[in-house]
Image (cartoon, rainbow, N blue to C red):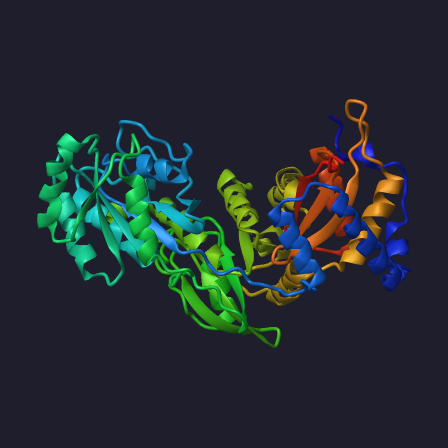
Length: 507
């Protein structure tokens, strides 16, 4: 399949045509297109979407932060197997070796039409030496960042000293805690679960994560106490816009916050990962108030060495839940790493607006050969590795000296305005019909899919729905997105385009 340029076909003067558009005429045409959808088989969701449109549907809605369920427990009790069972798909790595869960720590899950975030704390397992303290520290962070805790114990082994160390912590929390007695594969083993009453955490819930036994009952109980909106990662309407400062350890996130705040708010240390808690700071920048969330991970105590990256990614996810726009800080003195790209992917997945801050830029200003080479390589890296986010505003800063920090505000404002932007239905359909007239979708198997009607279903991020008679090639969808950006801006925000392929009703 050729790249997006398969659809180029010369200049289409779309920008001019959109600027000269008679908006009333465009709206009445869109109304006619919407009416013609009655000839197609639509489902309830389609009907809701279209009904919302006729009712004006212009409400900007901020989705509330999903409630968070954390799964804690010592190594090898089946935490990841339980994650997979709840998700209904194999996402977390499961092996017999303790400590193989890596990378992803948060997942979006659903039960009985309730959506929530699931946190798998198997992402880092401590070494045997400090195991009690380490699992307890891990549980401590999970408790901090969740609304409900599932504490998993291997019922066939019974409660160990490590389990008891965690229990002491869990007893002090005001949050609901469910004691999950895992590996109860059939009714004959139920007495093993009953023995866990003496942990003092209330009724043990017998389950078999591997076979699924008892998991549905457990989730039914969890739903009774799970809040609709997370108390941990609250979405706030109004107030200062919320900015998450993200980046791998030691790229200068805390220095950036301190410089912006004009004082030492966050401990900055040469040791990577010295910030433990996300610090919410109201900061005045560019004559406006902003709420900055600094998420530099967890303080690396000696026995937490392995866990720092795990916690950093856990906190990154928690911060994104709270934020509206993410500033991803990249260190220009080093190559763009896989970790940098993973953080950018987390932002895209969360649907937040994005600004890229290239830090330590002052180091590239010296005229020596080494810096000239690094500048050249950096441009090449940006072209290759960041091609998928070339729409994100870029600012070159020095967090240490504060140089060019004033450029951050216009970039944030641009990204947020794009994130909030809504294209009227008439204008969007006029854009689609002009685009398709100039660049028709290629024939596939003798058929040409048509776009019947399009609408922007929501903002934050801008989400478009296309009703079509067949699947559009991924390349053609990317082409539509690219032209949308070129004509309407959308600088600094991901764009989501969803297709609804619908067939004509049988008469």
